Length: 342
Ligand SMILES: Nc1ncnc2c1ncn2[C@@H]1O[C@H](COP(=O)(O)OP(=O)(O)O)[C@@H](O)[C@H]1O
Ligand SMILES: [Mg+2]
Image (cartoon, rainbow, N blue to C red; front, side, top):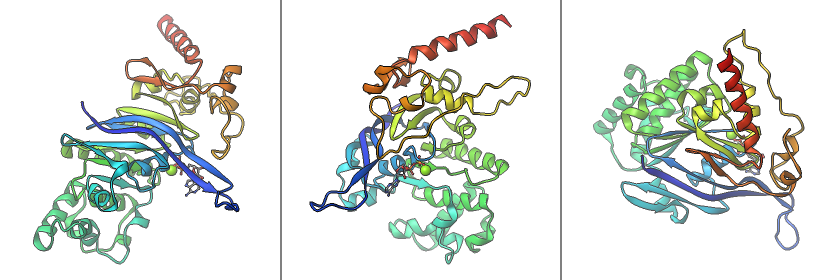
């Protein structure tokens, strides 16, 4: 596999409060605070974490739909190495043909006064890629691929159900043949059975159209279903990245452990011992010193309250930012022994 996107030390700080006499804001919300990772071509990388951890801000910053405060984003497209962070507005618009977003609430992004054909085809017109009969044909083709009935393309978005509207939004995002898609809580608002259909559609489209996804969601089951690797975000930083199975079965960061233990067990005979997060989540405007998770971590020591742990490799493809990652590794080994004894 080759690297499609390289995200290096991205920060997004939002100014908050009244601007003072010298034009300085009262403070900053450090929504994303020094995040580095790569996205491989053709993979689905999951991004999970509690609400407010900075997932949406990071997803948008990668596309420069929000300007990063600092850091670089490199996009390796067809052998080129594009520094996304240094593009001017015109170049950025051209690049957005290759990078698209799908949101949680498609209704707000679909113009209610346009027919579905026009909604899906608009990016072709706006980018002067196709018009007239060619546009119609391309809309038909992508609509069919997204499971929409081409007989219904003259209708307006309000006539469609939530799942169908999400299919319309997906068709619109794909009509320019992008390489990379940020899906931000794309199925979170849908009924469970419809969610599964949309997740299956995304999986099919990924293979058929060689797409790469950043899949943002708080639903860990959906993430496990579609993602090859998953990264976990806490208060604007990445605390763990690993292949999906490794992260779910052998989490090595105490925050990931807490997230995973909160997933309901499918087997009701198996006793669940959720490790609930205690304490309030600190504000990203005033994060704790040292490890940001130390105020809620059951393993925290003095070291964690002073020193920032760096994201460090602990196994093949598995990175964790914790001073005590070995504690969870020992626990995991013990759990496996118990299973072996049974
Ligand atoms: N435009 C903004 N101005 C100020 N603060 C913001 C803005 N957008 C997001 N935030 C703050 O940044 C943090 C991260 O938000 P967000 O990226 O939406 O998190 P998530 O998607 O993980 O729920 C939150 O504390 C949020 O309140
Ligand atoms: Mg969000």
